Every structure is written in C-alpha cells, then in structure tokens.
Image (cartoon, rainbow, N blue to C red; front, side, top):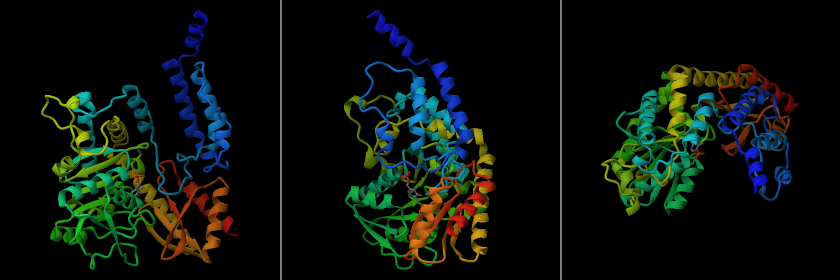
Length: 442
Ligand SMILES: *Cc1c(COP(=O)(O)O)cnc(C)c1O
C-alpha cells in the first residue's frame, strides 16, 4: 500500500513543473514547425501500431506523454501551424489563443445555465458584440458561439423550418457540404441553384415560394466566390424566407474596410456564421453564430427540464442551439481580440490577401499555367494539360513535405488551391511554394 502510494505520488502531475515543460514544448514546436514536413509521410495504421493496445495500470509521469508526443506522434502530425500549410483554408492558433485554451481547461466551466458560470455567459455576449463591431455587423443581433459552422448552419436551418413550416432549402451548387448534411439530418429537401461564370449564385431564376431558407455563401469553399447577397435578401423578403449567410472563412475579411464590399446585404440576413477558428487566429474550435430572430431560435431549441429550472430571469445560451454544455470558448476569442487588437487582425488579414495576390500574379504571368481566380486569400490555378497531370502535380508537390496544397473541381476540371491563412506565412514561404510547384511540374 505504502509503496503504491509513493509510486503514485512520484507519477502525479505537477502543474507548475510539468506545465512549464509543456509550455516550453509548445514554444519550441512553434519555432521549428516550419522545418518539419507539412504533410507526414506515414501510412494508415502506422501511428496506431506504435501505441500500446491497452491503457497503463500504473500512473505514468506527464514527461512520458511529452516524450511520446515527440517520438511517436509527431511523425504522424499534419502541421496545421506550419507557415507552408496552404491546403483547404489555412488557420492560425495564435499565442493568446493557445494560452487561453489552457485557462479554459483550468476553469473547466460547463456553461449550460447562466448560473453555471455567469462570466462565461456574459463574456460570450461581450466577445460576440466586439466581433460584430470589428466586422461591421448589426449591434443588436443575438450572438453566441458554437463548435463549428456545420453546427451553426444546422441550427439556423432548424429554426427556419420551425418558423416557416416549409421543408425546402435553396443554396447554390457551390454551397458547403455542411448545408447538404444539415438538410439530410433535418429531413429537408435541398434545391441547388445554378451559378454564373464566377461561381456566384444566379439570383434571377430563384424559386423560393416553397422554401424555408435560402443559404448565401460569402467565400465559397472551392474558390471563395461571393453570392449576390442583396438580391438574395430581396427574394427572401418577398417570399418570407429565412436568409442564412455562410461566411465561415471570408467573414473575417470584413475587419478590413477595403474588403467590406462583400458584407453588403448581410445586415439583412436572419442568421450568419463566421469561423474565428478559420481566419481570425483563434485555435480550433470557435464558430460565431449571429441571429436577427433569437425568438425563433429559442422556439426551435429551448427545452428546460425540471432539474435545470432556475429563479433568475435570464436566458441560457443552451436554449439557442443544439448543445446543452458549452466550453468557455469566449475566453480565447476575447484573448485574441485583445492581444492582437483590431489593428493587428487587419494587418494579418491584409498580409494574407497580399501574399495570395502575389502568388496569383506569378501564376498569371507564367506561360503554361492558368489562374482561375484569386478571391480574398485563396488562389485557384492549374497547370495546362489534363486533370491527371494536375493530380500528379499535387501529389508530387505534397510529397516533398515542403508545402501542403489541396484541390477542387470547377467547370468540370481539376484545380489546385493555395490558401494563405497562417499568420506565420511570409513572402519567402509563398515564394518557396511557387518554386516547389514549378519544380514538380517539370
Ligand atoms: C470551412 C467551411 C465550413 C465548415 O466549417 P466547420 O466549422 O468545419 O463546420 C462551412 N462553410 C464554409 C463556407 C466553409 O469555408
């Protein structure tokens, strides 16, 4: 017994000592992440094969966890924090966000009622109001945080179904697959509207008479195209249809005056999603949900059992969405907004756009390459020749470990996507990406 206890004591985690080591690990990781292969070269099952089958009977020291992170896991990590991660939509876990995540876990609040953490509930309101101001959105909207844009869109469409009693959703053929998934879950029919040459929804032929919701995308996933929100809002007003705007990626750009052309009309939306975990330097996960019709949200989601009844006259955020428990995500959003400042956020967004534009200009000027578009910080391009040649180029470029890019299919052809989104990406990194691509194309 005595010996057992002694063992456990030596193995127990010392928050100060082990915490300092974990922080040191994080700091040195971020210093060297640019030197690691962005995409790991492991095969499926490799990581698992190097891990024990069963949990340990005896407590192990935290230093063993850090050691295995280095020796076992790191070879199988895709380095999202790498400055040469250009796939999908590149993200940044910024320093204030990383530190705030530690504090969130330390507090370990579960905010399903106001009284389970008044600070959590009220900071969430404040942080969303700050973010609305930063992005030029209406101040009076209800705002709260969900885990992902997929959840927000699911919740918005659910509220639209309840509010209208109709069961059809209309979105462009370029809308994100989370719209398809939400419709499938909710038993709604999704009607895809055609797009124009620049991949924006064509509002002329919209048929909305039987629709509960229309989804507008500002910054589509394939090419960051912007749907004509004002015309779509007109249509929704005429037909009494809920307008949901999906600006998961591009909404962050509204912090910059020169990119605010793409927010025009959004103030007429019934609901909106923007992901601070995508292009606003907040670590995964943090998705901002605004709604101009909070009563409709509450009608769709409020369900208060006896054991959660309280005397306070204050709504709980859990009555506005599918989840009951909520993490203290507001703390990391608040920390990032404070420690980067509006100026710092704008500077980083502008730099990402500048770098993507620079890359696009190189592609445009290079014979043998074709640029489809450069919207916000996303360039879509290809090498002349057939799809197979471009697929091989993507595989070859990613296999170098120097960069990671992704692809899409548009106008029936295979295209490569380079998205700048890491605040750690420099002109040198984008330059290197272009060199790697040209070398691999030879
Ligand atoms: C990334 C993205 C989503 C999905 O975001 P999750 O938070 O991963 O659910 C939805 N819509 C658009 C336009 C996106 O870019």
